[in-house]
Image 1: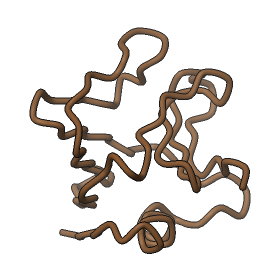
Image 2: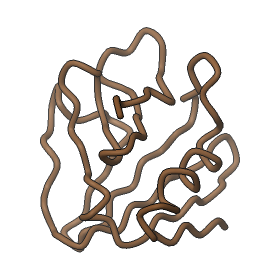
Image 3: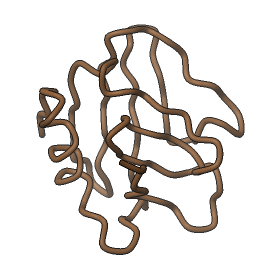
Length: 116
C-alpha cells in the first residue's frame, strides 16, 4: 500500500506529516523520516488552543535527524517520546482529520491511541 500524505503545510517544504501503512512520516515526500508502526507503543493526541499535538511513544530510543530532514515542529526526547505540533497543518485533498487517521492506521497494529 503506498503512503498517503495526510497533512501538509503549503509553502514550507520540510514541514509535513504522513500517516501510512508503514508508519508515521515526517518531512517532505522525497526525504521522509519514518517512525515505523512496529517501533510505536502508544499515540497520544493532545488538544491545545490553536492546534493538536501528536505524541509518539517509541519502543526504541533513537534521535530523529535535524536540519532539512527534520521539521521544526517536531521535538524528540531521549526517553523515546516524539512530540509533533500540528498547528496550521491541514489535511490535503480528501484526507481525514488527524484523530481519525491516527485511529485508522493504529488500530490494525494494535497501538493504543489516547485523546486528551
